[in-house]
Image (cartoon, rainbow, N blue to C red):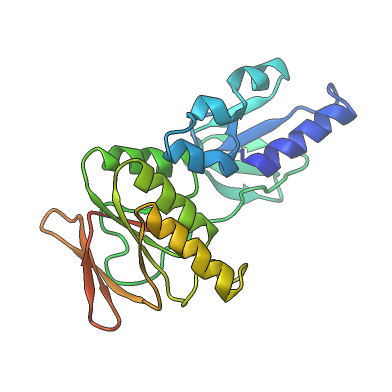
Length: 232
């Protein structure tokens, strides 16, 4: 039920709105929204309502069966049935897989502690926004576009933010060294801190199972209350 899947449906409806009996399985509990605009939601500049592309009325209007909050767990290709975690059996003649990417958690000790988050969907954004009301210090692992957007949003919510990046320049796949340094200077002026050429060795936790800090491969460390993994 992401952007690619919904765009496929929109094209099918343009071809022949009455020809297909369409079912959509989406793990999230809401309609389709613009994931590209999650950063302004995190920054407090927009709300989820502002970035909705197709609400639940749209599915009903087009006669689409929307299985929201359902996780597809198995496909029986012989019988042409999709099974869900709740036990639903959904038949199909043609099946489109449009699941998108899976957020990557770097496989270091402590990656499964509480308040270690990824940045992919509105659930992630809501979790971050909730933590900004309770915590003060955040680390964003990854100095690419996604990581910088997360850092900027958290900073605008009043967090003390440090970007941890393994390379020596930001956006190292997109920018040359001079441009990257200018970008880093601008972001530093906005209050974001940086640890460059720094690789995370482990994520430390407290007695509650929550993040308490990062330890790096050079044996240095950083105390934080929240970690956002934005490396891929």
